[in-house]
Image (cartoon, rainbow, N blue to C red; front, top):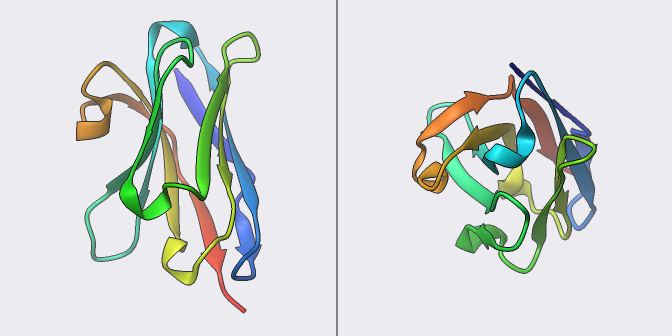
Length: 120
């Protein structure tokens, strides 16, 4: 089982990035998928979750209106589109697979994480 994130990097405030999470070794459609983020010295926090077939999404308050989550089960990929980025969005972003309690941190599989830096 693998979740591999890509698309991170350095961006200026107000800019955009799209993170991708490529899944292998399991059937993506059997899992809710989500994104979390973590900065040094703080707990990993929930960012976004999408249901099994993409019919519903839920985002954390700090990113509502700026981030969107999407999935393509045929391509075994989950996306996090991040717009209007702020310096406080700087973190390591993790892709996650789980069930109905995914947004509470009950995760079956984690990606290795990818760094996003928002700075001028």
